[in-house]
Image (cartoon, rainbow, N blue to C red; front, side, top):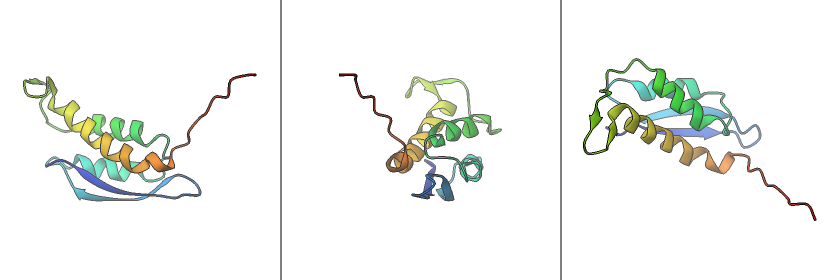
Length: 101
């Protein structure tokens, strides 16, 4: 099924604390990503989730799926990364640029 995580972020440090796997991938990739996200800053969480997913030894096809026009590995990684991004968004540091007068 579509992997789903529940992520707790410390408001003070903006670092990921506990990560619970609500729904794992068949290969166990979501558990691998969840374990690797502990201690990661909210700012880096999306990137780290994507890299952890990418380097997991999953046997998903790298052939192009005609329904998605992409590989199942990429579709799966994007879904998991989007799940992480949605949960850490309130804790990410927003950089604002003030133009000179």
